[in-house]
Amino acid sequence: MWTTLLAQAADANTTEGTAATIAHLFDRVDILAQPDQLMAKLANLPVVMAAVFVAIGLVCMLQGFRLYKGVVILIALITGISVGYKLGQTVEAEVIVAGCLGVLLAVVAWPLMKYAVAVAGGLAGAFIGANAWTGFVAQMSSHGFTLNEQTPWIGALFGLLTLGLLSFILFELAVVLFTSFSGATLCVLGIMALLLQIDGLREGITNSLAKKPMIIPMLVIVPAVIGLVLQHQFGGLKKTPPPKKAGAPAGKPEAA
Image (cartoon, rainbow, N blue to C red; front, side, top):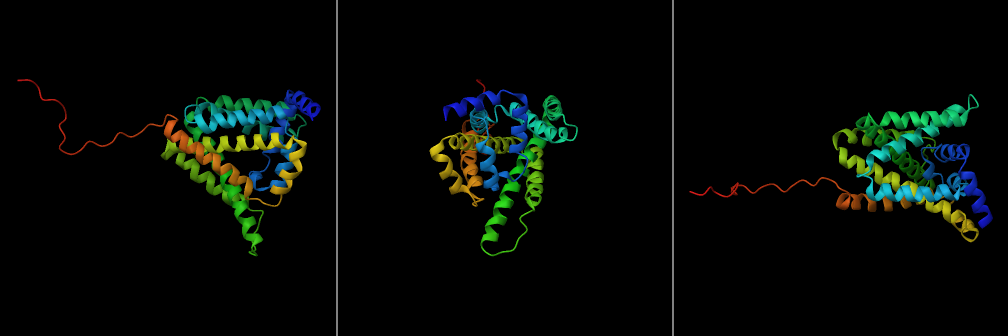
């Protein structure tokens, strides 16, 4: 097992392997509700990248509001790499296009941070909505209801509009929401990828999660809510001072 881990760690240092891994892992917006595909991708995730996912996820969950600019730039970078890798396949220059587009979006996000927050919030909302919708459709289908399972865009559109608009109206709340859920997603995926590297656990984890599209989204929701609460209490959110009582003296009277 250790030989495999060391080999994967060496592969993780290559730019091409990193870009391809990120692009393949997030090539579906409802990947959390597709346990079979997700398990196969996480089993091939390099151990170093899995550990990085856990570390970044914990930081986003617990200190996302304080470091939201860095989180937004990171989301822009990952989005650019994912989209750029797909576009680069048409010209057979995946790594170059992925790297250029990732850096471009990350650099542009800095001076346009207010709008970048709205875009990042919208993307996080689309991710949450698509997975929730796909999981709901799968659950209803298992109970005999006939629903089209190939419509994750419905939930994605709802989440995109909701959290994207919320970013302009309630900026702080939107930042806490998308950093908590983004961090929880990375953390859970990283932990699952590390567990899948252990031979004695791989088969049990795969069998317990297969054909159960709601389990992984629920595993993400629990730490996301915990992170949201912790950020609200200790993450630096501005607390509204209590209103002054009517008739209370404004200050000490001046001495005669």
